[in-house]
Amino acid sequence: MFPEELSLPLGKWVNRFVDWLVVNYGDGFSAFADSLLILLVWLEQILRGTPWWLVVLTLIAIGFHASRSWKIAAGLGIAMIAIGSLGLWDKAMQTLALMIVATSLSVAIGIPVGIVMALSNRLRAVMLPVLDTMQTMPSFVYLIPALMLFGLGKVPAILATVIYAAPPVMRLTDLGIRLVDREVLEASRSFGASRGQILWGVQLPLALPNIMAGINQTTMMAISMVVIASMIGARGLGEQVLIGIQRLDVGAGMEAGIAIVLLAVVFDRIGQSYGKRAQRSKPAGDGA
Amino acid sequence: MSYLEIRNIYKIFGPHPQRALEMAMAGDDKDSILAKTGHTVGLSNVSLSVERGETFVVMGLSGSGKSTLIRHLNRLIDPTSGEVLFDGTDILSMSIPDLNTFRRAKLGMVFQRFGLLPHRTVLENVAYGLEIQRINRTIRHQRARNWITRVGLGGYEDSFPDQLSGGMQQRVGLARALTTDPEVLLMDEAFSALDPLIRADMQDELMALQTELHKTIVFITHDLDEALKLGDRIAILKDGMLVQVGRPEDIILSPVDDYVRAFTRDVNRSRVLRARSLMTPLSLPCGQAVDAIWPQVQSDMRLEDILPVALATNGSIAVMDQHEQPVGILTRQQVIDAISV
Ligand SMILES: Nc1ncnc2c1ncn2[C@@H]1O[C@H](COP(=O)(O)OP(=O)(O)O)[C@@H](O)[C@H]1O
Ligand SMILES: [Mg+2]
Image (tube, rainbow over all chains, first blue to last red; front, top):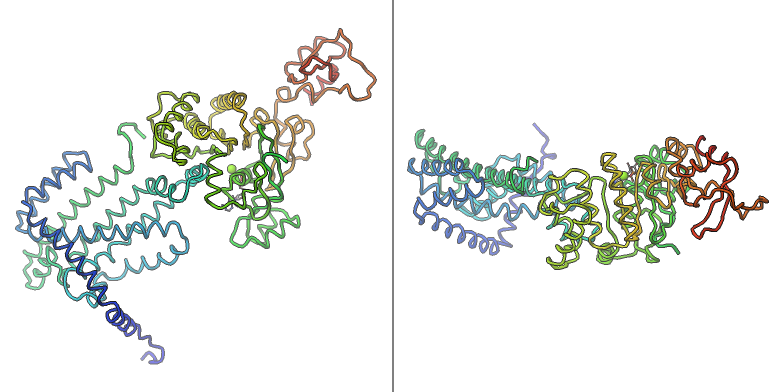
């Protein structure tokens, strides 16, 4: 038996902390939760209200804009139609709305944090282990504090997804900025550029390919969190998988699983194509 | 007071420079300080002054502190101890906004690996300094185009840096530095990455520009031929310390130690030495006067051009200044000795 005196009541502390948060900031949390929910519901209604072919066409257009390739754009269209043929269109739109909100929130938080990490060695030293922990923790652990703060539903699902999906974009923004050639930075400084001018004119544009790669990874992680988030009340494809598991309906679970994979492929293609575009932000065909 | 002045600069790289600084001030050398403190000495007690309109070359082996030195002049690096004065102003006491204003107004810099912005076209790169100064787009593009043409890159305005050869990229770097019309041009091994032929071209071009622009240029190189060709004066650094400063002839004729001598060994002396540094000046009481029938050479003529004259005469040669007044005497033997050392 491990001696009682040495045991660390970490769980109790965490509970007490969360209780304290709820008691003191509960109103703030629910206001925040409400606005997030309004945003999500609004987006969900738009996506579910739009005719399916318009959604498909829009995605094809985005795909073409990103890749300049009809093949890729057509592939995206086919993938979306396949999701519809599995009878999962409506669920997919719910998932899509959840993903868009969670990914946008992750990026909106992740890029500024990544920038600050790149500019401050001290913050970076603190953040790196935190990010490592965030990524290695089993993802459903995030559901617990999110649940305690916000209860069951879509908002905790989004927040758990954000915590899980934000690290890659933070890391890659930090990395991208740090990889900018030292001489280029010196050149910029030597002409009297201010910090803001250096950040916007040199560091961010040159870090863009890495930042895009980060956004892409973040999107992928957000999709993979979808199934797990359905355990606490997020609707959509994840819920379908969950039902499949609970009822031992392997077929239904598999259909939903395939739909998730297709959705992931669509976003991956779009993200990667934009990433490649950022990498050669100049006319094609120069061989360099 | 000189135009640019550096006084007793010490630069120690590392998190806790104090002890290393004390050791450097006590005269310890770079290796023993590194061994004892783990800190790298970048510069140790360097004092220099550069005059307005001068091309001042800093030379030394790799790691001798050249880049560190030139970065003190625009405060890309702060010294651990010492003073940097620009036209009498202490730039180390400037606030960051003042420093940026000062850099925008006075300084241009050219880098060894060019330091161009890869996501911008040649035109946008050259206009970059003016963009930082928030000059409006029409004016900055007009001035940038002007300089692009002057460095011979007309037609490449819309190319990207990685579509150009090294020599062309450095022309962009040079044009970028000149477009803001700075008083001082800092060039850190600007031509070292270029092929020999292109390098010689760029040197000639810089000299041609300089006869017209009269900038103050601080030029870093590790190549003595380049230093001798461009420099009005040359400073030689070794392990962060200044070992010699002087005109090119001083360096060749009287190197202070073996380190400097090693640099000068392979130099083509006949290209560097001039009549004035070899002659016996008339002001000395050597008891001789110039004879009107002696052949004459100009005091700034190079040895390679004097040689044919010397070989054609048995006696003395009169050295004349730019007002055609005799200033010194050369003998055939002096010329031959100078070449054959
Ligand atoms: N940022 C830095 N951190 C630590 N050491 C440095 C740094 N910059 C230069 N040094 C060291 O200072 C010395 C001088 O470097 P540098 O000025 O770049 O030499 P050079 O330009 O003559 O090759 C070298 O020993 C180099 O390793
Ligand atoms: Mg250097």
